Amino acid sequence: MSAALVAFLQARLDEQEAAAVAAGGTSESWQAWGTGIYSVASSDDDAPPLVTTGPEVGGSDEDAARAAHIALHDPAQVLREVEATRGLLEQYTAPETGERPSDALNRYVASTQRMAVEMAVRHLAQVHADHPDYQPEWRP
Picture 1 (spheres, rainbow, N blue to C red):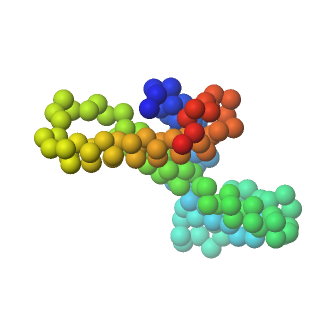
Picture 2 (picture 1 turned 180 degrees about the vertical axis):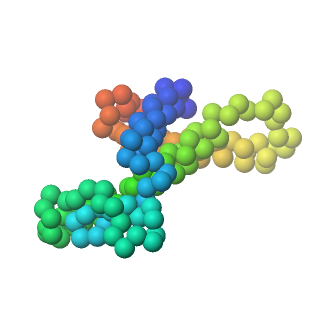
């Protein structure tokens, strides 16, 4: 895998992390009620704080669907996804030990695992295929 692909994906993760932190970080979990998005940080609140509303108060089914989609991507969830993807990148970019497995089966297993991680990273980067820095040769 190219260092450029890893750097590209790390930059996108940094952007996602910054946006999630700015939107509330790990302290915010969101829930959609009607067309509004509410913070559910405190379970003892009768009326949790409103984060944002849809285009119309009491709006359409489409507005409620948008609100539900936004709530699924709350800051805490995005930060967990960023952490998971960084873990995968760390696994791939970790230097190989100088030791080679002693038998052919173990060498085959190690090689297959490395190829699987590379394919996973390529799939994760493909999410950003519309970014101007994305390279077509990175497609899985």
